[in-house]
Length: 93
Image (tube, rainbow, N blue to C red; front, side, top):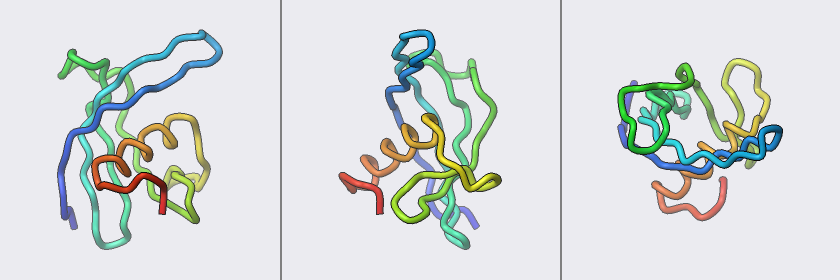
C-alpha cells in the first residue's frame, strides 16, 4: 500500500567517468513492508526524460539496498540519502 509520494534531488557520482550528476526522481513509499519505488530518474531540470528504469530500495540495517538483490550500490546509497533528507533524518535508520 502506497503511503506517501514525494520528489527528491540527489548527487550521483559516476567515479569511472569522473562525472557528478544531479538527478531527480519521484518516490513512492510503501508502508506494508517499508520499501520505496523510485521512478522517473532524470537529470535535474529535465523531467519526463528518465535515464534509468525504476528501482525499489529499502533500508536494511542502516544501508540502502535494492529489494530484489539485498545489495547496496552507489545509486541506492545516493537515493537513500536523499530520502533520509526529505524525511528529516540526517542518517540512515
